[in-house]
Length: 116
Length: 237
Image 1 (tube, rainbow over the protein chains, first blue to last red):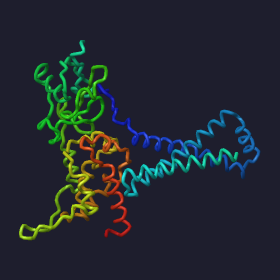
Image 2: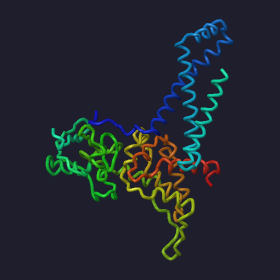
Image 3: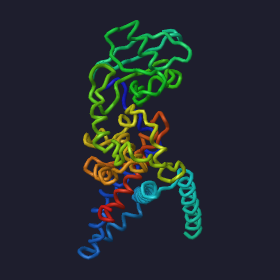
Image 4: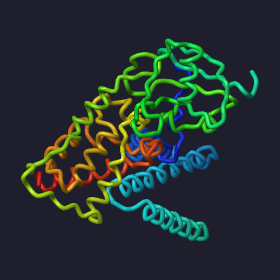
């Protein structure tokens, strides 16, 4: 070990990077399982119904929230990365674009919450 | 320990470090502290510095795990509980104590074609440079690099891939690509699109966060990513 660890990672860009990476890893681990469950609709519908019944359990509902979070964070992380690397915008332009996206996402979520 | 003395831990090897009591002064820099230790406590301590005013880029070290130019870093900024830990720059081979071998860093500077590609001779008229052109503004944004290797030490991609050219070398390639006096476009794009090139960058942004001169190598590398991609789709043109 060294006398001091590496603390130069504690800044927003690096945290955004690791969040994107870990959410991607989480989704990659989930997807094969997801497709396998979906395939049960063709091969073993009774077993699929058994799995679908699990979604009434609170813990599973919570896990679904986590899954939606991973998807959302990975999608916006990807959009952020593409905008940052492919659009030669100035930093204030990027801040405005991120702000506009966040605001529209917030308004859309509010509409969705009213609908359900 | 009184408030007038600082607890300074200096890394001397992979698993060894020494702790020194160093008297505190007003406006004391990290380099002042290292110099005090070498002059008053342990003359065998090796470290590197030259200008002491943030121009030469030779005194960079890890301070509490963060790469910094030590001559322009005040102790008041880095002290935690009256203590500080100082080590050699990350991602470079250590020669002794706080001195690292900068050769890989400068080799990659050349590897990224960070050299002048001229076509004119002394008999040709001097090419005019339009200071307001978009390309010149891009180039100007990156030319104040002092080669201190702080960005190179901050970069996790360098740590994970020894062949990666690193932020400083790629930023220099980007400034030359935008320089009206440089004719090395094909050589530069070729050099920065290889296996150790700009597409290794994960945009973690540590280079831009810690550059002591407030330069933005991450955006320069993003520029190279765009140019190499455009060149690929235009088949080298």
